[in-house]
Length: 248
Length: 103
Image 1 (cartoon, rainbow over the protein chains, first blue to last red):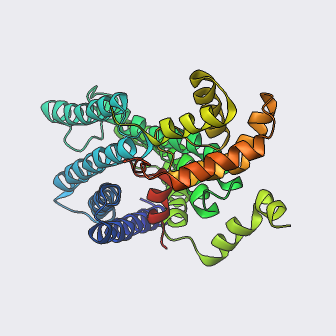
Image 2: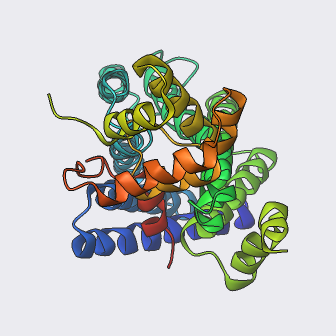
């Protein structure tokens, strides 16, 4: 694997791990479940990155179990994430609850079916039909947060104009919408990369770079959501024309 | 059945404008939608802002004379109501995301 792609993967994992840990600590103080759910999902995804990256860089006899562990951590994080979307964005609506159950069932079934055909790592999309089940469930979860983010963003802007929503909070809805798009694109890149690997038995440099670019964008967005730098906060709070008009 | 904050506000609007129950509830829903809010999760503070900044225009469109006076009366009733129901039990979405960031 190309070094830059590997480095970005490591950074993505560290970012998820740090963000997840901070959110879980916040949940201890706030006693609120959204923090715990989102923190857990990010923490699990951070662990997944570790499992995926170690075998890629080194000749490791534990490649298969580490890849499998990475897959399990990824799917566990996705279930927590879907649960988070349900209780936060969908106000615990019944249809959303069933969607969470469906995502979880598809993830479990995809892994179980893959194991039954010998694809523990989930790297044979062309020959393992079960792969598509958990891949699709993951795409549904990531695109779901994007849809909800883009639905809530214009409403948040309306609230912001009335002084009922902080500009940074409003911006976070937009960022969640974009994150959903980016992670969905990442799933598409991963599909292409995995299919290419199954065909040629090599991780191509082109796909590594594409993967790296998408991961870098995703990592940047995660940081902007959870750890917005001061210049970004100033830009968000100062750039809104509605706010400027209201102040003048 | 427990009366929600939306129900109370709609009743106050009905009383101060002469609207029917259906008209009052419909107008309030539209005003909330304009403000990016929902009937289920709106808080008392948000309702006051809606009646202050959004509802006067909506009432004027519907031919209510002294729309501002009617809105002020509703706000006073809401603020001074001894039996005002608790805020919606679900956590406001903005509150969740204001806790989310690295603040």
